[in-house]
Length: 617
Image (cartoon, rainbow, N blue to C red; front, side, top):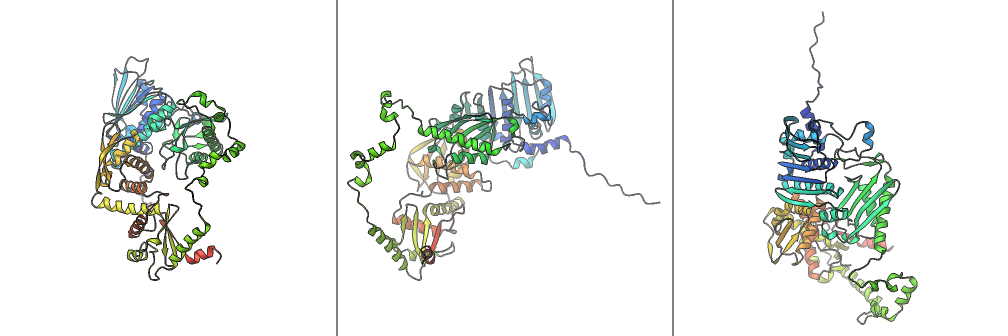
């Protein structure tokens, strides 16, 4: 008789509900801001006209959303914490006609799996409301209570039962910035709803219901008030509406860019490219326009269910959407450029004169150019203008070239970061050997040619190295301002400032809080020009937000890179011979002198044989 085989247990088992919910929560609730987004969207879907968001400890200890929406029955209030519980989908076809914000039925179950939740809700037709406590996906308490119409949901101690996840959360300032971002996106989508945001008992936002333009200015700052261009195009296939910023509002960072499809915020590099194309030749290539654009189209033409956060979507026909967005923005900008506007500070009768109202034709342009008045204002006809001779220009370049050839044979400019500074100093002992071109480049003769140094890139490398050293060693010296300047920030930028203010102290900036979203600049590093402090901090915040998209950088690294880029000598700046010499000496004293922190070259070397090859010699 064969021996009885050893018993081998089955390996696959079903996860308990609470563990399954925690795994699902990892997809939906990645940080406090994720929960904020889900709770705000649920309040919007409930038909609320007033929504309050209350935060404590950057959402780690409390996130509460109170709305005056439709409220829930006792059964619905209990059911909403179950997995896959939703009021939005009855059959599979509903999935392709979604116009509400929350629909997947995972949010509240996910929140209840990783936080302690208290829910109060009441419908208009009910005499009493319902109170429910849930912890670790288990209902701990349920009872009737007196409550106003609507829903209040408070989640406390996020990730209390998943300490590893809690340890991955960033600083309070960083997490608060993400919360403000999510709040801004939802509030921007629904300007007809009153929103408030209170953090640690201080109200950061109070957004009265109003128009989209009013909401944009409330959220992004008063500087946009008179600088928005209306976009509105309707077709049978889709509608687009919203605002774009005038070209002069373009920034070095992507901060103020919002796309909404059927009122849902999305991230789409493809559609962003369409907007950038519409601004071509209107703004510098490295600048980014401001826009808040809404696209409305049939939900069957778009799939919003491709990502847990629902921020990435797929269009049925992307090319049509791209072309439509680009055309709509171009049309709006063209109208802004050519449409005459009334200046109410001027006498209206003046604005009706034919010279203002009629187009300036080519014939009129020629007639004006030939007139004596016009000639008097052109450069050639000004008394101080002296025509340059070709000969003098050639002589200049001949001297430059010969000067380079007469350099001492034994000395040369360092060709790599390992080259010695002493050789370089010896080679550049004559001031005439350094020349600035186009107020942007510095030429330095080398043994068999010359180096072409980009002054801004070189200075960025120098500043980066100096700040890096300062951040490790002793703080940068601060120069106290005789007249401290006040800096008023948007709530979003104030959240960024809170994140970096301590590190700024180490780098020579003395900035102190001064009430709601306001700071006083008491001092700056010694090399910052007096009177320029506010502008520098404004641009610094933009640069920091730009670098914040690079998750590989630490907070200090982002700040140092931002400061180096912001404070570097800009292209178009005229330098004295002394300034050029100092910059070049400082550059080649750097450990890695040939590239910027981003990896772009600080200089290029041109050899004599290269130059001769260009001329076919």
